Length: 192
Image (cartoon, rainbow, N blue to C red; front, side):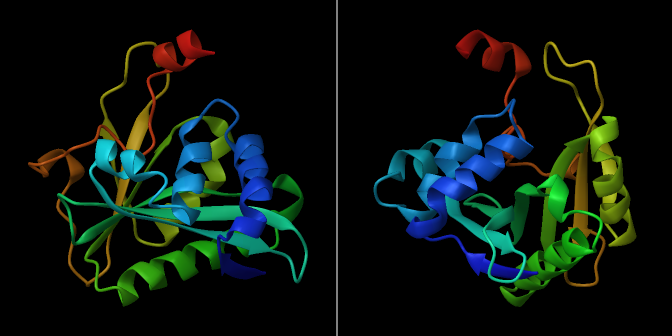
């Protein structure tokens, strides 16, 4: 499996993969476009108080896009990154590619000098393997308050990239966003 920065040539295919992996979400479509065209999508960065949004696509050999992983950087937390829209299509799973992709993203965040990598996920059964992978890589979890209409548990996972235990997300003072890429289910259903 190899990883490539998202480019215009792979944008539509990556948006299709993201839609297949996360069919109930919409932000990834705009986030992916903002990755390849930040000037055209300045409002996306401004509204979310983002300093950076980057995406890498996963490919089996020279094959088509089979997965993706994004890193969001927020202006208020310059030492942190958020892992978002991370996943592989079902046909690409079970061969260790997800672990390699996560390790690669962790190494990328660490190489930038960031101190913390965070992500959020739920306790739904479809995320059980990913949750186990995060735990094996040293992420610690804390439960996050549900949004209206949610009937599952949401967790923020945090990983110290500098050998230190990261500050719990609940203790971060200037949190300009609820959770990276998270939408209230009621609002998303009303918009559909």
